[in-house]
Image (cartoon, rainbow, N blue to C red; front, top):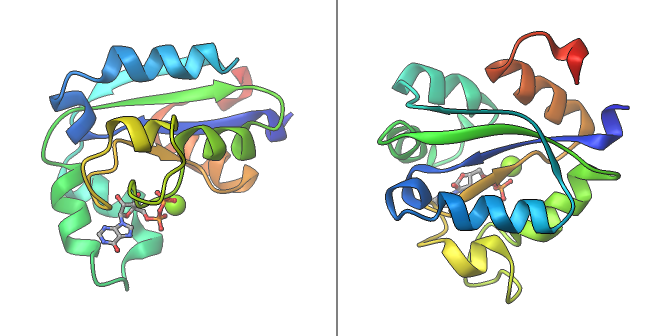
Length: 139
Ligand code: IDP
Ligand code: MG
């Protein structure tokens, strides 16, 4: 069951640039089902907690400021092999290295403001989903 779940955020740059609708279209066209979704503005503390795993990396403070700098859209997505399939759909972290047609290739501004988040493992998909949504059993 957990292998069919991933978690995503449409990041502040993409929301600000009015790419939310286009990105959701790409996700649905790729066969994902939206199980839960919300629009919200993270506080710096929430962004720091979400990205705690990166706290030793040099870009951590900038990342926290950027992720709390404007509203985001958070969602839980369902598809077979969801984590791997979604990472393929979004493309490489650096949009300059992302394959043509991927969400980051189409909509990201920079390696930091890269339009979208995707979980990197089944375990993290569940942890990240429960960061934003309760009643995980419904997934
Ligand atoms: P991912 O989002 O592709 O999984 P991670 O390495 O987990 O990439 O990094 C988390 C986020 O931190 C990235 O999506 C991006 O917003 C930011 N980031 C990653 N590497 C850099 C960097 O070298 N400079 C600035 N920001 C970065
Ligand atoms: Mg990551």
